[in-house]
Each structure stands twice: as C-alpha cells, then as structure tokens.
Image (cartoon, rainbow, N blue to C red):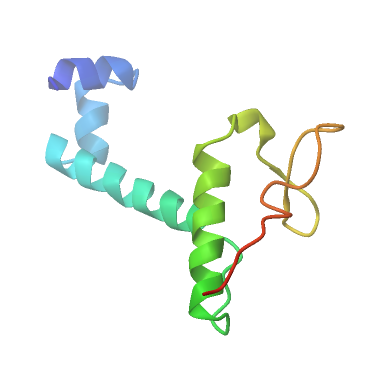
Length: 102
C-alpha cells in the first residue's frame, strides 16, 4: 500500500506518520503484534493452567467459534466473564455443548 494512502487513512501528516513509525514495515510489525495480542486475549480467555489438555482445546475452540462465527453485537460478558447474548436472546454463548470423550 502506498504511504500516501496510509497517511490519508490515518488522517495524519507525513511527519506525524514518521513520528510514530520509521517505515511501513514497522507499521506492519506493530499491527501484527496488536493482532496477535487480540487473538490470544479472545481465544485463550478463561483457560487456566491446571485445566486438562482436552478442556483447554475445547475452550479454545468454543472461544474461537463464539468470537468469529457469531454477530459481534452478541459478544457481551456478564459480571462473571461468561459471554452472553443480548437481553432475551437465549442461553450463554458456548454453554450446553456436549463433548464426548473417546
């Protein structure tokens, strides 16, 4: 992407851009770092160190499903951190899933 487009999209000046980033590559690396952190926060939410491996995998898959395969307007958390749908829209997201161990 051209720097001019980046600078216009960020609604900044060329000097403002270079005040924060040395290059487009640094901007990319910073963006990637934030994206990785966000992914980890969303997909590893609620996983405890002492959980069994199978439970960790199940929770990662549920978190991934609940954050990527539902409308974002449904992603809300109650005071216990449980993801909840909006008022009157049903059960907590990810609850009631039956997993069979082999």
